[in-house]
Image (cartoon, rainbow, N blue to C red):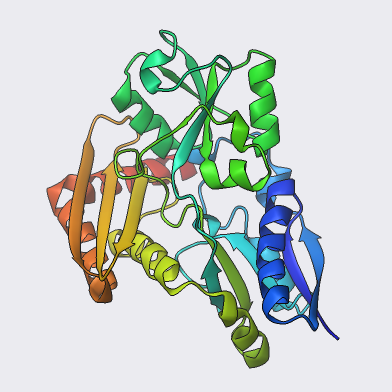
Length: 314
């Protein structure tokens, strides 16, 4: 029996996501077994910094990738949205899979079924400036308050009356068995998620042909095409990790539909576009929508964000 070591973060969600991948592979190859190696990332150690104040990427992935490159593991499983758009030298994405839920959801302390039913000036916990800005566009009175911690910790803060509600990625809530806590889900075409949200990325070393071929068996080509289109929006726009950007792509038959936006950090300027076309041209369409957003004022927003970053650094 062949045993492979898979690296992942140590939280309940990361381990649940890793098991989704390993079980899928084991179902196809019963003679393959996996051992899970947990790795603490900077994001796991730093529970204070609001995610929108981060100044670099790879906050939740770099140390896992280090373990893979060092030969301490044969593959690694990540939430694809956490991976920087610039690939790590020596590593490749061998498979993209299990994107059942791309959308965000809201978990409220009191029963509600829509954003309108939240009380006036309700406090909404979110780790994402992208979510906070879109929330304020739905209701200006709502207060978006930074929150850190894993999914369970954030939901428990509702019981302590620290927040009226929290916004989370639906995929994470569902994967740890807390789907019944969800009050309602947002339409990802209207409340646009992070690029690649909900998808799992399985990394392997580029020169490990055997493992790459093995893991490729669980790759979902439609999911891969959609999330790579979303990430191409980031690549073309050359967004930093602090930019409030969302992208959602969906393949319907032979076509792909892409929604994307960028905003400034205060949410005063919000530029959103949509594009449709053949799925075979997903990358080109993603580049086109990104360029349209840049030309409509996105370039100026990114320049302002870069100036602010330089000011903070000094």
